[in-house]
Image (cartoon, rainbow, N blue to C red; front, side, top):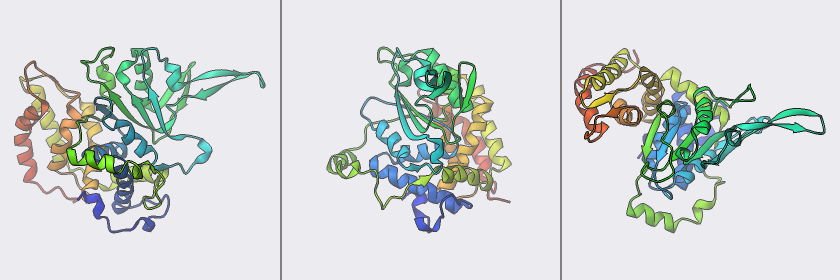
Length: 346
């Protein structure tokens, strides 16, 4: 059982918008996970990692073949969020299908002329949503990818030299086809670095596929009363609570730095991870620790997330199997030192 299912407070115990403790933050995560798990079967690990990225204010890149459940996962997350500021008129979920002929304005929006008022005004594009599915992001031109880079890095878009802010909750789930498929543009390193995780979705197991077929009618109902949604404000408050109440001990930071420096010095690594990746990893570690019922980050969090965070940022030498074997070797000594310390809040 996932630790966030062990939260004792019932859903009604958390008033709307009032997320003040880690138990409240876990209740937010539990509600999101329950709705997503009802719609996406056999993907518990990916659901947890997606929610960790959401609560860490990161973005997720999924590499997969068509039909593996990526759209369903993204839609389930978008449908789980209730906007408590309807005056903003921001959609919960938008899907953008990237193609070679797509223009930046097709994503960010454009300035249009209103004949009635004889003035120009900005018409927002589909990127103005809480959850954006950037489908097959590596099939579009570098110019469109640059527009996405600004949105993901700065939570803003610039159209006709005017900057427009995106919502604080703005979260991107992007997908890309494997690069051995025709008609793809490899993502530049700068844009890859903006994704907290890169996840490769494999086919689900046989039992899960049978369950998908047996429950397809029930899973079409996205407004189940027994699975309450969460509000935008609750997610933002959960981010703040996790940041403030989950301890990251100096020993954890030393372990992270030593692991990364060990990779940089390893002859199997051509290009190591950046310092920025370490900074981005900290809130993800805090979110995972909160998911698992702790108010402190431990070695198990680093071990679980390091391949997801560093895998697409580290360039390995030709012939090296995977990032996992490199991490296992370079992290052994830092993990042993970390295991000898007490990491609970002091």
